[in-house]
Amino acid sequence: MIARHPSFHESFAPAWGLFEYWKATGEPRAKEAAERAGDHFLEHRLFRSTRTGEVIHPSWVALHYPPYWHYDFLHGLLVLSRLGLLPDPRADDAIDLLESRRLKDGRWRPGGYWWRPPGTAGSNVEVVDWGRSGPNEMITLNALRVFRAAGRAGSNDRRRAMASER
Image (cartoon, rainbow, N blue to C red; front, side):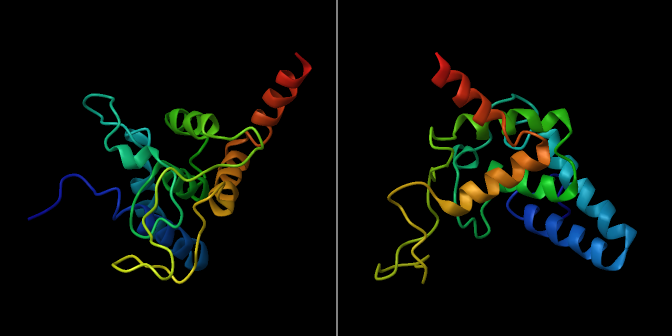
């Protein structure tokens, strides 16, 4: 059976890998495949159904780190930033959503977790405690990378400065 609709979970990491392979080797088919995957994310504005415009899955609009094999809009944006596709206006909804999640201090909190802290029984136990008590440094780093690639690095800083002037 041939898939007619690619999986977001199974596409974001290979798209990134194919793009990096193209950069290392110059293989044009790798770049073309990565860009096709990027266009698929953009067709869905990174998290919306093409039929209804609704959010495809609630976990896709929550911020997570580490993502493992799961998809969320920040990791989609990060891949698009690597591919140079963030100037596409179809990414604007996701970039706006990311900006709306920014805390007053300029950082981001996770909206969910795929891991369990060390010492916890069960699956998805991680040797590193990625933190659950406050903002996540890796989510913040990746969000700032996305903003820089989208040319929005200081937009929230300007908004905070305007609010403090009031």
